[in-house]
Length: 366
Image 1 (cartoon, rainbow, N blue to C red):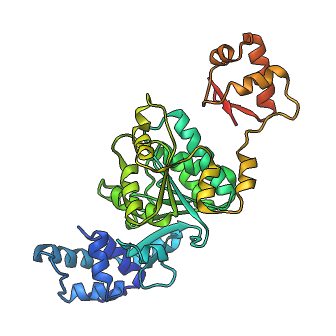
Image 2: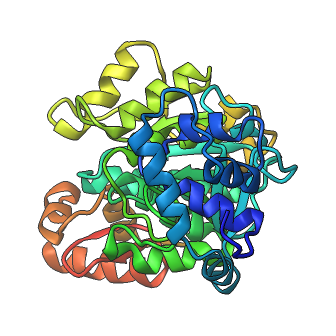
Image 3: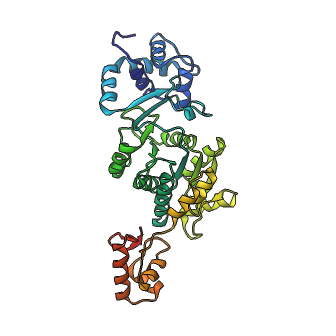
C-alpha cells in the first residue's frame, strides 16, 4: 500500500467511486472489513468473489491514483458526513435493509430516525394539479412532524419537498441519484440550497459522481427503506415511482395513492394502484391516520382551506370555484356566474386576505 496517509473516511470515498462497485458488491467487500481494511486488502492483491482479474487490477490502479488527503479536505470543507455499516451513526434502516446501503454520504442536518417518515413520489412530467397536491401533502405532513422523503427530482418529488420546506417544521430528507455535491436537475439549485439549511441530502454515490441512469433505481430503494409509508401522487403506466412502489412492497411498507382523472396520462399508474387495492389519499389526514398519529384532529383543521374572516358574497362564490387547481379569470367567471368585474374585485379581495395566490396568469388557493 502506498505510503500516503489514509483515513477511514477517505477509504470509504475511494471504494464507493471504484468502477462497477455497486451497493451489493461494496456490501460484500465491507462485510468483514472496515473501509481502510478493504483498501489495504485490495492493494495486497485481495479479490472479492466473482471479480474478474482485469477489474481487480483497475481497482488497484485507481486506488494508487486516489488522493486521500484531498478527499478528507473536501469532506471537511463541504460539511459532508460519511458513514458505513459498522458505525453506530449509520442509519439503522439502511444497515438492516434487505439490500443494505454499506456507505452513505450526507449533507445538511442529522437524520431523525425516530420521527415517522413518508415518501411522496411521482412522475417528473406531473400536471399542475399533481404538483399542487404534492406541495399540500408535503406541507401537511411536515407540519404534523413527519419527515417527508423524496428524490428532489422535477415534478412530484420537488413539489413535495417545496411544501415541506414551506411548513418550516419537520426537516425533509432527500435521496439523490448522484453525489451530494452534484445538483440535479440544475433548475433545483435553489431548492437544494434551502433543503440543506434545514434538512438532509443523502446519497450512496461519492462526491462528484454524476447521476448515471443505474443509480436512480438504486436510489429508489433507499427512499422506500427510509419511509413508513410511500404515497404516489401521479405516475404514468411505467416509471421510476412504480419502481419505488416495488421496493416498498418488498420491504412490507404500506403504499397509498392519490386518485386522478381518467383522462390524465400522468394518473394511469396511480389509478392502477388503487384498482389493485392500495389505500386512497384524499387529504393529508388519510396519511396521518395510516401512520396512527395523534395529530390527526389538528391536521384536519390545517387541511381546511383558509377563507377571509368575513368574505363578501362574491368572494365566497369565487373561492368555491377554485377547487381544482389554478384557474383563469375567464374560468372563474364561467364557474361562479358573476361578471368579469365582480370576479376581478373578488380575486383582489381574496389575494389580499391570503386565500388566493396569483401566478401571473391564473389564481389558485393559497
